[in-house]
Length: 462
Image (cartoon, rainbow, N blue to C red; front, side, top):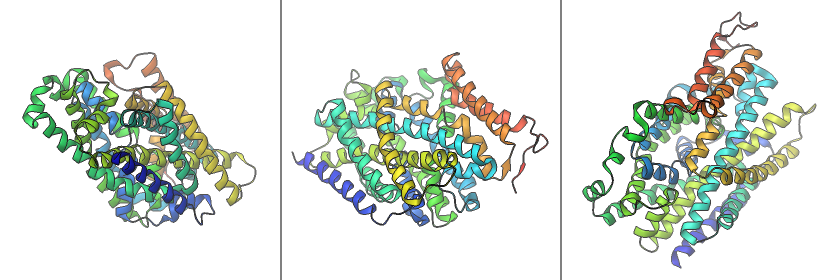
């Protein structure tokens, strides 16, 4: 009973934060980048809370439960990505002082087509990733509170949609800081109590099959593991919520420092959540893999601390869902609707449309969660229609390199076609994900295709 009260209090605080943050918002820019006033520590907290969603926590534990610690190494591709972005991308973002979205950045080189393609890719990606969090929310409420799947989704997603719709980026950032603190305490506690429950590190290693602690392990192989690293390196590079964090910093140094800290933080965090999957395997190899982390929490944590940890697991899921919901609404309103209108939306109308879109994307995300059961699979599926489409042109734009609009469109088209064919026609040869092949196909077209505007070679944008 006390654990339920702890969780209920946490959810109430999050809703209050959303109501408080909604005060005084009058424009889409404020809704998207929170006044460009975030410090490096706030960026560190909100970015970390955003990327540590259901896929990188409960999904990571499930993956390690099934295939071993090589899954942790694969996720470190994401950590490497954060470090590279902090070093090479964040310092360049001063070139886009008025941007609030991926589409705005691409539009500096490719005009309306850049905004539209960036907006559609961002909307699809964000909907898919929120879908992964919806699936994780259903698992959390089902295991911890014995609620039916749809009831858990209704409660968890309803709360996230409510405070994100009302408060925009301000609500997301404030709630993310709170959620970051809770999950940073809760997840290490689960690992410590779990190791003690199974009898220590030696007992844990002795209770799991040897292939689960081998690298690369029988499931991946070296090629498959390298492809998994590249999947997570490319998959979330400059996705809308992270780009918005870079644009929300008070200066580029704050954005770079916060991003670097989040990348370094992710390395041990992924190890912690993955090891919880091994603990679940030691406790019972017949468990449902998606229930690995919640099962460990329910089994090993004492009262009161259990409530804190359940709140931490909810924090993990909600902090990612809110960020991608907010970014989806910005992509639709700013990068799809605005370019198609003969006249710009009035500030009040744009803000209202963004809030309505937040609600609609929340509903659409439920469809992703219902159609694809494995949480980590939802993430990879969503990545397939992001990185092969816009990653190469987006990085090039940030560095002031542009091609013609026709080459930009062709590279996006080829990237997504190659990625889709690789996955669904050829069956991922060598366990290499289609998005990896699609990114390189996009790069080849973007760099090598003849361009009427630049005489066939990429040039610096003016």
